[in-house]
Image (cartoon, rainbow, N blue to C red):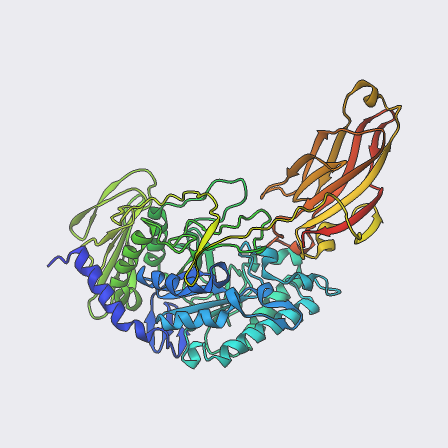
Length: 601
């Protein structure tokens, strides 16, 4: 008898609801080649990345619940080192950084949790999550076989592990944490550090395992991961990924349903059909844990954006939008996908696949277990053309670039290219700033807005004076985004440009990221780099007068570098300032005495 799509999915929701209470108390977590094994049972898991500092605590229960309603089993989050260890040994876990509260909310929802400790995380987060103060510990080089870096990395990792243990949050203690991650995508950069990189990667794995947390450790994109940890995949598609050992399960730590946004770029978008296709293909080819990065992106509050030039919004075109609302049809389409996959779980985890070619770009993978349960995935990887294929004496129509899921090897309950979910277009409308706000206890009261107009250049006491330029980041140490560079130039009344009424040209070069140029208190120009090329240079005619002229340049950073080989050494700020058009040619101010002051702290 053919079961309807609606009945099958409703039955799945009922089963998941009945057993949700048991998820948080995971117990024993091991693994084999097929999947994680939790309390003796193989598990097929759908995970959703929600980063606790990228939303406010009041949103956390709703976000987790919306993810659960979307068919998610697991919540994944990074741990953000520089949000927690504000200075050496000075820890903060309040407000948006209340990690324990967040993990407990996940537990209360009956979900598992993947804790990606790092503590380097990249994540489009300022300085990759590593505290800026660590860069100024003498002799420190990040992410290599360097004793100061390893000392502080192990200290913080141990602190987080002990905090989780104290709260009994690891699955081995009855908590929700079923996996932990050390480092992050180091395989991309390891070779740049030579033998030190190799030694560091092996040390990181060994250090993590020595924490004895009672659940497996993972390392994503770690192409030489040792046997003691599980290597995992990050990509738009991971169906062809194979772990380094045949004894490890196939885990996808980052499936990108969208992308982050940089200033000046368009809003990224990944169609829900393609996201669903990638997930279905992953499970078709033996996948066991799949994590959406991000499921809710949220907001880069304050000065937490990295990049540089990552926007405040970290919406990510995720299934739950920046404000906590389900994004339709993506959220609904993926919910239906999850329900269809769960109907196949027993056969997928207890049967070995039989592969069948159905055409030049069409194939089926059939899973049959010892009880006779059968599930099939039929895919058409032709990006342009629909196809009709014959499978087990029946015809099946496959849209281009799609996967059909047959939980009983007969009836298609879901096709990744056919969106049945509600489609809603949410339009954000700007509102004029209101002069009052409602208060529950006092009714409507007036808002009192105050502004501060900072003077141009250095006012009050200068921080220091130095011949030539200093690096912006090494000077501000990320206490502020703003640094004034000021100097002066004397212009003779005999200069031809004064007599002709013409203008000399100010020529500036900078390592990044942005700049406002003032001459004699007047804004003459603004310039910036961008997300792909932070350095910039520009020329601008300016007005000079006879006598002394003040040059005040406000250098700005727009988030610190968050990844790359030796990324902590990437600087910012001015490298050259010249004025062209004098009687004697070009005047180079680069070696002048410059007065410096941190601004807008």
